[in-house]
Length: 332
Ligand code: FES
Ligand SMILES: [Fe+2]
Image (cartoon, rainbow, N blue to C red; front, side, top):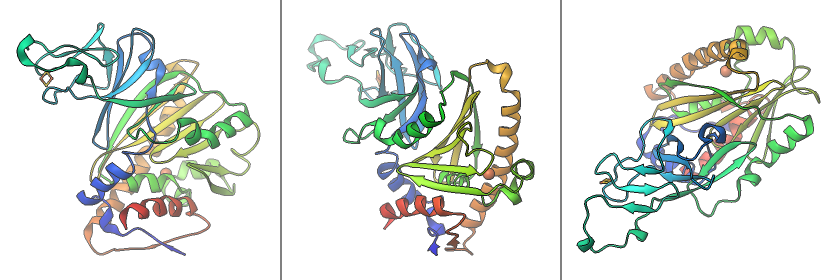
């Protein structure tokens, strides 16, 4: 029986700093759908575990990612989660201007005598790769390709003939719990009977199974979503739920905001337009509210000092055990 990670790692600034660097500084992280930045000058941006990132479509049609930080004195190039700029990125602080492929075009107000070479002060680029229209970035230049990371999920979608629909709607919810609390909750179906009465009714007596394949966790309710025609409930290390159905998909990123603070960023994909999303949104809002309530209560208890470690069920919590084992490697 595996013992859980100690409570002190949840919401603690030291653990946050280690996870920022060793998990979120090295993994492929979901940013958005490439169709959200379809035209030259369109951009999407996010703050992810303190990494402030943007992706912008260049005049050559290529989507590139950069740290959202100016090379002068660290001003932001864009603010918000998405938008459009006309042909260049302009720093909000003193107005330095960068081309859409990241070169410094003009250090506004600096004279020729300032004595630096603008070629050395381009934006700091981050790797960006796409899979089935989904754009991921990776701060680690030495990481293996995105295709390796998503290979087990790609194989499963291909086997079931599932396509990725177009982006239809984004939603976010802020939670007062560590990202690990929410991710662990996502990785087991053990709590469904207690926390999600409507879902439990829908799943009936189905045998709920969880398996791990590389960086992918797959959850299946036998007889409900395990057949050749069924959807896929997947989760990709370190923080991404990807549920793909015949008529659309729901992508859920557990975005760490700081120690003990998490944002859930949902992207709903649907080829029939936003009107077709009603039922999926209603179910998602209900499940999210139920999970948020229990996760915030768990976080409060982890912070209260009475509990140190617990135990994990090999039958129900194999994916939680796998997740915690990976994290234990960086916290030893
Ligand atoms: S910080 Fe960007 S122009 Fe000064
Ligand atoms: Fe849940």
